[in-house]
Length: 145
Image (cartoon, rainbow, N blue to C red; front, top):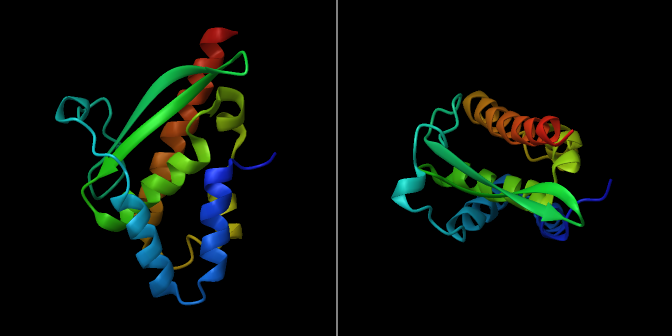
């Protein structure tokens, strides 16, 4: 399965950065570019449980090439986590639900070295975000079956 171009661009840019601090800065910049969620979208239903920092992920059903899909937006109150949200959105948003459910972001992030310098708490939060996204996609597929 190929990755969306937006995610591939991020992966390519990360591969050009040798120093982890430069990678960290790049991820933070990605998060700073995310549009902020309106306050009314920051609800208990959109908040991701399992993250130490506050993270909200908002999904919207869409149609992608005739198949059910999801579009995502998100925000966090922590700079690096917001950057990770941006990376996840680049990987998952705008794709068919089946692809979202089948895409193992943690394995992909390990391949590109994105998790190796994250604290355990940030890594656990990342897992919680990925699980939430993939679970929503699986639920959408179950309802459309």
